Amino acid sequence: MKVSIVGAGYVGLVTGVGLASLGHDICIVEKDERKLEKLNNGISPIFEPGLEELLNKYKEKIIFTNNLKKAIAFSEIIFLCVGTPAQDDGSADLSQIEDAVIQIFRNVNSYKLIVEKSTVPVNTHKLIKWLANRYGGKSEFIDVASNPEFLREGKALYDFLNPDRIIIGVETEKAKKLLLELYEKIDAPKLVVKPATAETIKYTANAFLAMKISFINMIADFCEKTGADVEEVALGIGFDKRIGKDFLKAGIGYGGSCFPKDLKAFIYTANEYGIDFSLLKEVEKINCNRVEKVFRMIKNVLWNLVHKKIAVWGLAFKAGTDDVRYSPAIRLIKKLIENRAYVYGYDPKAIDNFKRSIGFLEGFSAVDDLYEVLDDADALVIVTDWQEFKEADLEEVKKRLKLPIIIDTRNIFDPDNMLKQGFEYYCIGRSGCSNVQKNI
Ligand code: UGA
Image (tube, rainbow, N blue to C red; front, side):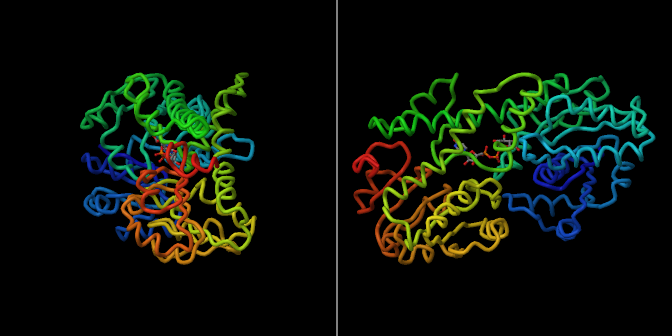
């Protein structure tokens, strides 16, 4: 089949490359000329395992263009994969969706299936249909479907090709047939529902996962005070199939381009429909406090922060990505610097994005080496759980640090082993680590 995609961000690019690998012909429209040039040269503008390889493998099947008209003429199916960032009031900014569909409707004269792939609030499909009438798109030619994406950054292609489910939100038989045919080769449960339900499934999934994280983070706080161990509690409850073992990793809280913005938008939309989603407000509040908690922990461990040198491993919002959007590292590092510490940061992939995102920040230096960043530091703070950190040579770490102090916000090491190796090892909600011994 032929498919057009508007937007070559994470979702658009992975959808395009993934669909090409299933045998479809793809036309991707992107406004950003620099991105376009990279893509046309077979370079992925984002770090995502396997993406660049597949991009090159299927380059004959993918056209990159800045010409929306060309993409409209290319296919009956047009995926909307543009950004829907949060506005100050928490609502989703749908202006890129509006821009794209207005241009589509002004240039359309035959049947089109417009598919929402970006995360959009419930009933956005109705607004798109309404725009079709207003902008001469002849709504009888137009179907609007919701087909939310559940991929995770860092595992995006795997998730796209091996999803737990495919949600198809449609109003007509024709739209249903087209989307089922498109995903024919993917062996996953396919749930056909109304568009409003599909739009709601996406927000519900992200909100539920965020809730799991805040829940286990509260349990971690409880464990810290009581001598229980959050890793073992998570394991213990995870065996229960009704709970499940995933997304129960306590730490510094969730970040990224999805959970923070989607929770805000969900709360906002609920409020617009007269529902006070107080549960999700609490999830957000708990998450927001995680960075504060880690900051207090560092302060309790080091006492004065003035002119202390603190090494940070991990700048991305999680391991496996170069994305720093809503990364807890940003807030934590700014707070340490406000308190006059000197921060030296290392990340295997995200240093450039981090520097671009914070601009010049006096007191912060990026170091491009796992060990060099530790030289003469008063403590190491681990903020993401990259494999490289888990496999680090701990003797070397100890040798480089001024004091053998590690504050691990992702629980990547075994506390007993760390203490045995001569570290002061502080982590989240675990028995046997230095927090409990020193009551920090
Ligand atoms: C998330 C969802 O997992 C995807 O299903 C969804 O498609 C995507 O948002 C989206 O809406 O586009 P992503 O933001 O890539 O994917 O990252 P996750 O792996 O879900 O992690 C989100 C945050 O939660 C990270 O900061 C991570 O460190 C944190 N996390 C995750 C925890 O603190 N504990 C956990 O147990 C799991």
